Image 1: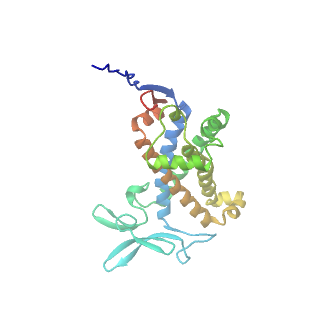
Image 2 (image 1 turned 135 degrees about the vertical axis):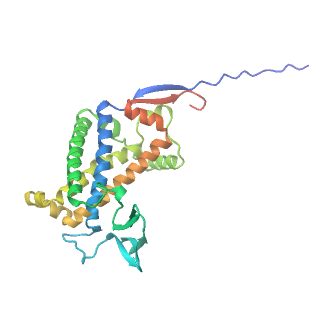
Image 3 (image 1 turned 90 degrees about the horizontal axis):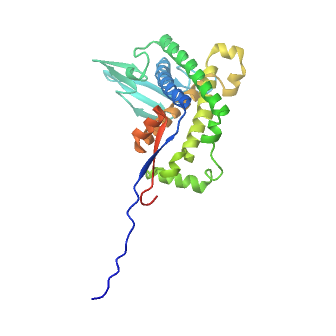
Length: 286
């Protein structure tokens, strides 16, 4: 009989989970405070918006002026239909926007009661909630910014390299995210380029715009700093920009939560609660 050579194959390498310290105590505390503040700022902001659910560009805005966005109700026989209008586009939104149900009653209001603080229509109370959490948010954000600059967090963790900003690299990362292919092994130790860019846009563009336009809507601030009205083209323009930035942040949060869930809910939540983030190393294909 012919001799048969037996090829020996090495046993597969076992995968190993290594824990790294991903988020500092201060980052974790400010993150959860930001979540609290942004949630209550949004809900109280919707309460304020409901007092006049239309948006304009320029200095002035009233019922007779042309608005670029409005949420309201129109009579449809014996009942009313909710209507969202953006420019020339109109959508029927009965049951959610414009017309919603509260218990057994149907009421006309921009955003429904479950989305606002307080749930009933009260502009003064909504403003008090909004201003309180706005100041808490500013204080919390200032602490985070000081830590980010002085502690090197922005330079170390969020500043993208030139290679990461190349069109080829960004195109590949977009494709990987679309296919739900998330970084593994050593690559998971750091934020990817899309994360870095998203965080930087929120921290240094959207949030400062939110703060500046919020101040511009205050008559008292306008008296002391009249250049704000010129900077944003009027109080109504500032209100529109404020609204757009708020919903841009909501969109960011929704995408952020989706990525947290899809890339490993428990691991991501643990890292933002305890700071410990697990990375799998070893195994075939590593």
